[in-house]
Image (spheres, one colour):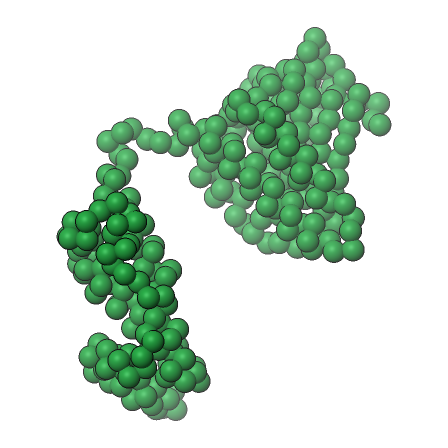
Length: 289
């Protein structure tokens, strides 16, 4: 145990190989009164959640008094320090993150260099997630699985922090999308991801809570196409991509949601002016030239 702490538990990722989002290390500590870190600069993101007590976090020139329930975030390249209160020294848990996706995720949940502190009432839930993250690094024979598990728990920490910070995320009511706009976004996402399945527009409309005619009208206002036309557009564009390869026409038809290859060929000719085989032949001639 460190002479600066009553209690200190930490674990390290020995194989931080994920480029977009990885946990470098995680821990939990109960420092002694007045214990101070910094002024320092880190090359990674360091997230602390105060579980008990109080302390002072300083980012650049701004002081942020923190108490139980507060989370403070240290950004790479920022000068920081933090110190336990003399009378009621804090206990905190932390994770260190690195990767291309971290900045965007923090921004999405309302955390920035200008606002690096937020408060959550669900301390027990957060503490469990921090503990799961730390215990991921058990030094098993499969370190890549440890890193993957830790990243999953860390993302759940960010999710819980986002739930605690919803007030900062939702802008003025006038800026929120209408319910129908959200449902159109859902419909577009549905068709874009599920084009390979047998999709019933009636079923999709009912699932989203709208009559087919009403959804189709709003959908066409947004995209210029009906849901059925949009689905065909997605399928045909994907089929054109697949025709660059050597897959059979039957396989391509099935991959874009057509059980009948002959019907697929008729729809493809109607859409492009060429049969699938003719389209593939043209692609090959263009490649040779």
